[in-house]
Amino acid sequence: MKTVQISLNSIDKVKSFVNEITKYDNDFDLVSGRYVIDAKSIMGIFSLDLSKPIDLNIHADGDLDNIMKALEPYIIK
Image 1: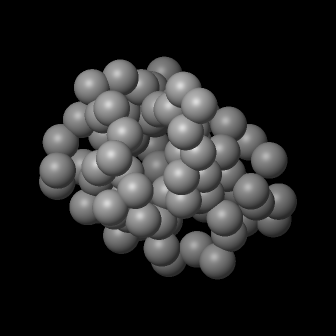
Image 2 (image 1 turned 60 degrees about the vertical axis):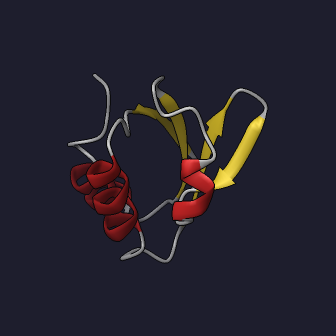
């Protein structure tokens, strides 16, 4: 598992983020405070406070390099 911080501070960013990660069969969790939601759920994402960075837990082993490249626009460096 790998954890990165992401920013989803607009509706368009949320939509493109979900479209990107649904291409993968892996599990993705978003963690904000005590809430953990499925990152592939648009409704779940909108229940979070999107004004702050969110932790993304990526449950992947083999395809991690491709996933990280795809998520680059959302990752906070």
